[in-house]
Amino acid sequence: AGRRKRQAGEDKEGRKARGKRQGSESPGSNGHEAGQPAASRDDAAGNEGRTGKSNSEKANPGKAGGTGRSTTKPRRGRNGEIRTVMRNGEPIGAHIADAYDRMAAAARQDGVTLRVNSGYRSHAEQVRLWNANPNPALVARPGTSNHESGSAIDFANVGRAWSWLKRNAQRFGFRNYPVEAWHYDYVGGKA
Image 1 (spheres, rainbow, N blue to C red):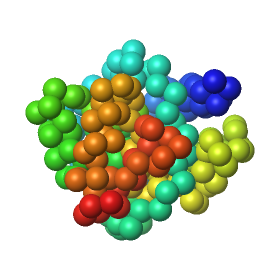
Image 2 (image 1 turned 45 degrees about the vertical axis):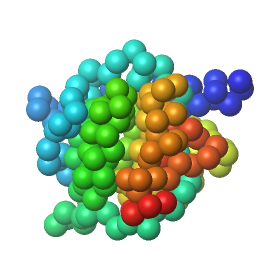
Image 3 (image 1 turned 60 degrees about the horizontal axis):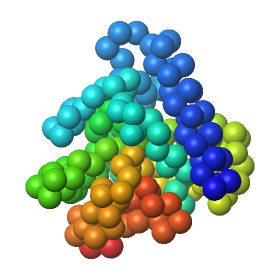
Image 4 (image 1 turned 90 degrees about the horizontal axis):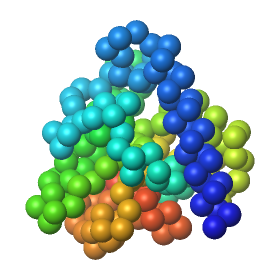
């Protein structure tokens, strides 16, 4: 129970920081930090935008750093930054978007809607999360999180969606980080 409270606090702090960044940006901005690439396409499954999160997404405690290692390479733009696309108002690595889209479509066919709570994080954002809670059991050390490569997704769903993910994510190349039910790393192929 104490861990959930710490995670919920970390999640709240992460949203607060993103809200501050968003509020200081010009209209039409995609919510990335300065120098981050813009999203290349919106979520075909329903991109609500950065401020259109459902209450279930806001309540999810799952924003820990994720410490698994991905075997896939992120796509980089000309400036060397990770290329991202938006899913449910959150950036994920462009290199995992097709696999995520296939998985989300399969989930929808089974009556389950997947919601991305967190995907790509800049190194600066991972540093901020670490500094707010420097506990490697809850937050990955900066430079070690698959969120920084765009290869990790934290899902906002609970219950039925997590059960579906546990049964099916491997078919789409995603592997669960066992101590974080919400955290999946894209490893390609079958995990």
